Amino acid sequence: MKDIYKSSLLYDFYGELLTQHQKEIYEDFILNDLSLGEIAAERGISRQGVHDLVKRCDKILNGYEEKLHLIERFSKTKDDVAQICRLADCREKDSISKIKEIAQEILENY
Image (cartoon, rainbow, N blue to C red; front, side, top):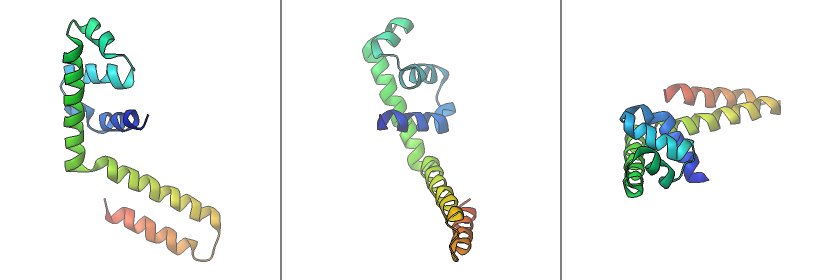
């Protein structure tokens, strides 16, 4: 399940950088949960061809993440916002200063 989630995130962030053909097949496999055989039959190509294309797309999308780190930054920001929410509910004396510190860090990273 973890791999499908990661592949979905990669596609959400970088999918528009794939060709139309790559997007359609990758969507069928990752998002629509079709098997390699089902995609191959539907597209009139071999099962191995579909497998190779999906692996190539994974490599391309992971390459973009290695260079741009958008998912990494998104996840970090999401964690920071969750921490801010917890601190806001806490009502401790130093919560406001911690919230400001985290917010400033978020702003500096963007």
